[in-house]
Image 1 (tube, rainbow, N blue to C red):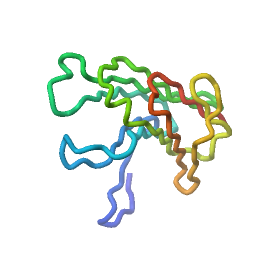
Image 2: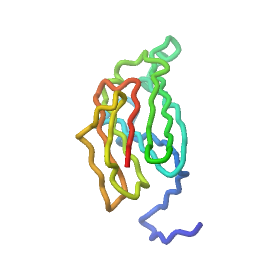
Image 3: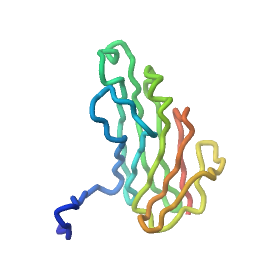
Image 4: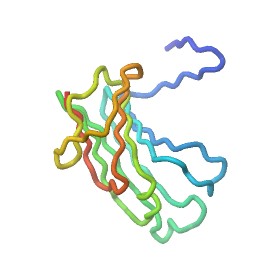
Length: 150
């Protein structure tokens, strides 16, 4: 694959269905994080990812002070969904950070975005220039299923 890229730009190739966590840049482990954790999903295929979170400073994870979540992206007909399961929740600081889901590689805005119980969400944005959907989730999001319908 060949990409036109000036020296200032680094192309990034990502497999369809990939799930990639992102956080703002930190200069050191104890620096406070500003903003939510972003889970970026690249539509066009299915995928899964496990996210391990701890304080990054101590050995507290050895005694259960960590959070482990599994994310699964599926696509079926007119529906796409991101399911998150909380496998271990011993790190409450991670829950307070907030969570935003960004789904890229979408040809058009979804007709409906709903969370777990089927209740439509209203606080989402679709950027047609980037083909990307952004959905901020409640701070307390533990187990959830985010569904996009055409």
